Image 1: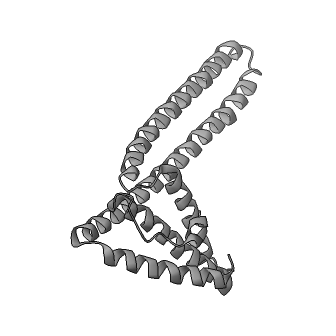
Image 2: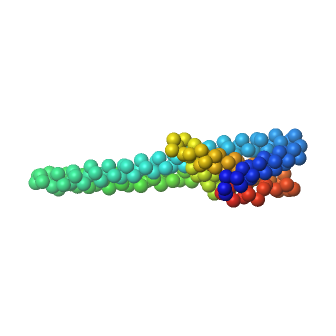
Image 3: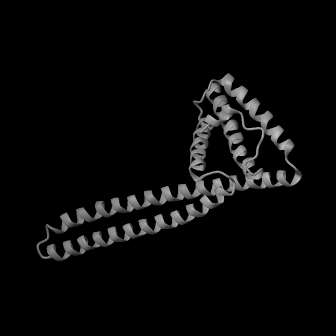
Length: 198
């Protein structure tokens, strides 16, 4: 979308949101705000779980690398000593195998823990009418926008576009939560321009 069409889309979304919120009763408004806040909290949790999983994966790869970097040179060094050759090489070799078994076991345990966490997060997202895959795309989009906002090299045009796209994305998410509140009976649907935001 061009900047002009984005501006128009944001204006349409603001108008749509005000109209739909105006049609809700007090209980629905409270539930809408509660669910939208819950979605954001769940998204934050999901983001931190993904970062933690990525961090642990990097740690395990580093452990494998260090095992090779230390183990292989030790085997080579010990191979020069005739008396210690067989015993030392065996100790180092079996130490490397034990280390790889430990690392592999820890990777599996990490994966299981992350999988269980993500299952709970997926259940939480479903209460807000937003799927895990959509939430993942949202996180990736937001990371892209944050990078643009925090970059010194971003020009005003790209910052404005990212800001508008972020606003449209926000309205798209709000529309999903609103559908949950109103049992999928929203008469005034989100403007069509907002559907391509993901």
